[in-house]
Image (tube, rainbow, N blue to C red; front, side):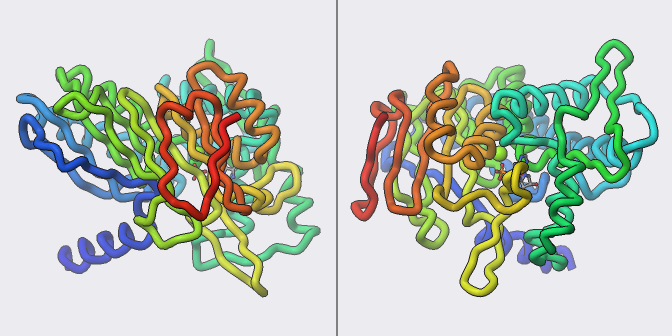
Length: 348
Ligand code: AMP
Ligand code: MG
């Protein structure tokens, strides 16, 4: 039974796994890494760390991710997100400091992206059911009715009382675009506290790197070619001490009458965001920021997304367009190499 489950999880990983995957140089590492692999937050997770303390550090990191899963999962009735959603339209509820932090970070990025990233997208995600057995194209009336509930400005947080609330019945928070990113930051912190200075964290394609690769050269991270099967990359990022997160229209979708319906919604139309872009990759010291922005910039589209990415300090982004261009912010010039010749590279 357990074996079947492992096989199923492995298969899931092969199908839905890393958007971004890792390339290792044929360079000899100074020591072998310790590693930890498990399934949590709806994805296959793989940690690698170097150093004496690595096994204990990785175990502590795994436990911290599993605790986050209990706190933020949409599927567990006891998660704090479920407590918030089930009290929508009724009353304020008390939350842990960590949940209040993540709620307020989600609101911060909703404001920064002018609502393109909206954590109150829950009713819309549920209506479309993309990636579930209930996926379907809703009627325009259903979409309009549901859109009335998507409104980050009405999501209330009262830090002084330790409470939060959704004022209208039917409203729901969905942290799917930010929770994994936050978990990446938590893992980095836990590893750091255990004295780890070189590690590679892969949470279903959300990558966090600590330090340089053993040997001193930067980590090399392949960026998925959105038009090819998983594992085919179109270029390589070389970096240290950074997080890399990609959002794309090829991660979760269904097709009907030749049209693709994917899982990143435009909160203004209620439909999957325009597919002018196939994907957006964000590089930031903060994995939470990279995750929130990869979703937000995808919704904003090339022109407005590029503007915002350029304005934000410490953030770099690569936009992959449906007409086979890779458009990068100025800072990507020194860290990104295009390897797929059917795409062209523009640095703006
Ligand atoms: P990501 O893969 O990080 O781009 O996150 C996509 C997930 O975030 C979806 O599966 C939804 O659960 C949720 N989501 C979809 N559209 C939005 C949006 N506009 N703002 C915030 N979350 C979203
Ligand atoms: Mg995201």
